[in-house]
Structure formats: structure tokens, C-alpha cells
Amino acid sequence: MISINGLSLSIAKPKIAFTKNPFLIPLFFSNPKTSSSSSSQVALRPVFSSMSYDKELAAAKKAASLSARLCQKVQKALLQSDVQSKSDKSPVTVADYGSQALVSFVLQKELPSEPFSLVAEEDSGDLRKDEGQQTLERITKLVNDTLASDESYATSTLSTEDVLRAIDSGKSDGGSRGRHWVLDPIDGTKGFLRGDQYAIALALLDEGKVVLGALACPNLPLASISSTSQHPSQGEVGCLFFANIGAGTYIQLLNSSSASKVQVTAIDNPEEASFFESYEAAHSLHDLSSLIAKKLGVKAPPVRIDSQAKYGALSRGDGAIYLRFPHKGYREKIWDHAAGCIVVTEAGGVVTDAAGNPLDFSKGRYLDLDTGIIVTNQKLMPSLLKAVRESLEEKKASSL
Ligand SMILES: Nc1ncnc2c1ncn2[C@@H]1O[C@H](COP(=O)(O)O)[C@@H](O)[C@H]1OP(=O)(O)O
Ligand SMILES: [Mg+2]
Image 1 (cartoon, rainbow, N blue to C red):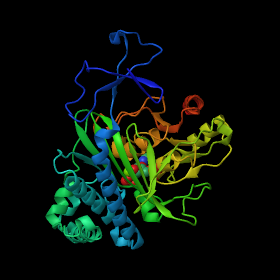
Image 2: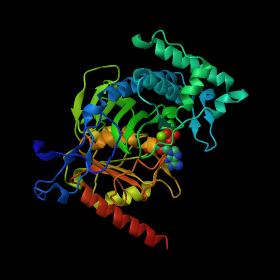
Image 3: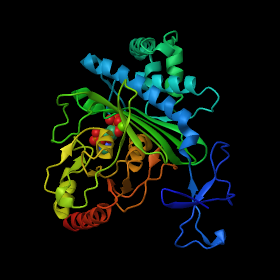
Image 4: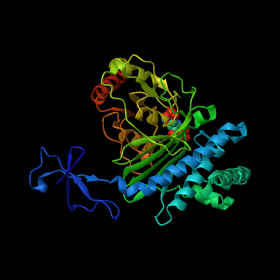
């Protein structure tokens, strides 16, 4: 038995083969208060060692940072003609495809000996049509220009076919076995088009669990967001949050290598808390959040920002609570939460559905969850869950 951070760890032979991954160290927690000398009486759960993913984290940081560079360039020169339409009518830009192609290409180049599986938002269907040709050429140029700006990729040139292939390698269904990268090439497309917050959100699943995340937020100021404005104030802008399971969450400026550890707020009085929610009322029920905040005694107005930048901001204590209640029928996708979730949990926060269940990333491309997603620190979670339960009951009763 060894002790790390006050937790006793017993190194045991796993009874169940959780993984075929030779790099995973089979450590199992046991609770010293309940464990006896017989390990068979102790509930075991697998622990993933952060050391197993150092290489992958470095690759993820590189891919997300380069992709942020590509997106910044496009956002600066954003023209109405960059906007396309998907069947769900959400705006998709050249940068969306370019970002996905770039991340896919960089991950495969950085990790050549690993099998590659990517669950990502875009596919190349529209680009393969005749009317998509011009857009495809623009994407290819954008990807190549971005690669050329990086020393290690200066000589890499992708053809249009390479770009299509890179985009389409994101068709994986993920699941509970093996490793899968999970990518939202531009999370918060609406914020991106408005010139506001957006994120490049990349995570790695191993055996259905999120084990690392790199979350690039090109428009997020390095200084805390302390007002309701999502616009950058003065100071340095462009953050990369990254987390490796068991090793905490860090922040650095994009294009810098000096990182600092972050922690969620230690606030335990809801009256002192502020909360994040979607900027877009179509993405989350603002009236329900307001009811929950009122029940909790939160005094501050909501801080509305786009994308998983909310998870990043919460991980460094800019706000204490994130409430997300999509309209009925909306199915959350894993790429909209995987990176943000580990960034918050490794910073000491808790992410659950509205019933208090942890998010399950092992079921494929969708998260099947109860009603909504709530995020806060450990101290506030019990009162937040109570306020959520009561508010949902009230809402249900009033609609009868
Ligand atoms: N109707 C919807 N309800 C909830 N979320 C949505 C809806 N449509 C798109 N989204 C996704 O919500 C996420 C961002 O929401 P928000 O900024 O409100 O947190 C994005 O991933 C966005 O997709 P996308 O990544 O294509 O922008
Ligand atoms: Mg998204």
C-alpha cells in the first residue's frame, strides 16, 4: 500500500481486464476507512495514470494551438461568403473544416505509431460536391499556410484529397473500448461569426473515459472575466487550457510555453457566486437558469459567453457555476463537453447532468443525459443540485 495525496493506493492485479493498453498502469484506489486486509471486500475502480498520456497531450496542445492560429486568421478576415449551411441550418465556415483537417493531420503526424480514431463534428460531404470545390481549395490553402507558419511542418503540403481524407477521418463512432480523439473544430460557431468567444476543443477518450483535454480559446483574455462582457478587455488574449488525468489543469497563452496551474473557485456561499450560461437563448433555457440562480441566492447577473470557453473560465475561478439546459429534444454531442469536462474536473470542479450523474462519454457520438448539464465546485454542488431539482419540479408543475 502506498499513499499519494492522502489517498491509499493498492497496486493490485486487476480482476477484470479493463484495457488492452500496455501503457496503462493498473492502479486501484481503496478507501482506508473501509478497506480490510482482504482486497476482495473493497470496491475497485480503475485509475488512469497521467504519465501514460504525456505524448498525446503534447500532440493535442500542438494540434489545438495550430488550429487556433488558423481560426484566428479566418475570424479576422471573415466574409459573409465564408458561411455555408448544413442540414441543421447551423453556420459552418471554412475555418470549421480547416480546423478539423489540421487537427486530424497533426495528430496523425505527431503520433505515427498509434492507431488513429477521431470522433469529430464535420464531414466532407458538402465539399465533395461540385459547388464545394472552390471552398475546398480555400480550405486547403488555409491549412497549408498555417502548417507553413510552424517550423516543424514548414515542408508539409496537403493536396485537396489529403484535406478531404483528414476531415473524413473524424467519422469514428467512439465508444467504450480503445482510444478515440474527440474534436469540436470550432465550438461556438455563432460566437465565432459574431467575433466573440469560440473554442477548439480536443480530448482523448481511453476505454470510454476522458483522459486528457486541450481547449484553445483564441478570444479569451488571460485575465479573469469579471464582468458580464465576453469581449476581451485590455491585456493579453488567447488561452490554451490543458488537462491530463490525475495531473491537474493548466493555462498558458496561445503561442507561449509558460503554463500555470488553475483551480476552480473555493466559494461556498452561493450568494457570492456568479454563473455562466450560453450567450444564445436558443442553446440553453435562460429563464430556467434564472430561477435556479434565484433559489440559490445568487446575486450577480448571468455571464453569457459562447462555447466551452465557459468551462475554461470556470476552471480558473472566473465564475462558480455553469448552467446548461438545452431546449427539449436537443441531444448533446460528446465533442461539445469532453475537453471542457476534464479541464474543469482536473481543476477540482464537478460536472454532472441535472440529476447529479457524471457525464458518460462511452456511448458513442452522443451524451444521453438527464435534462441538462451543471458545473460547479464540490462545496456548492449539493445546494446547486437541490435548486435544480426544485426548479425543474416547479417548471413541470407550471406547464401542467
Ligand atoms: N439548439 C441547440 N441547443 C444547444 N446547443 C446547440 C444547439 N445548436 C448548436 N449547439 C451547440 O452548442 C454549443 C455551443 O453552445 P454555447 O455557445 O451556447 O455554449 C456548440 O457546440 C453548438 O454547436 P457548434 O459547435 O456547432 O457551435
Ligand atoms: Mg460545438
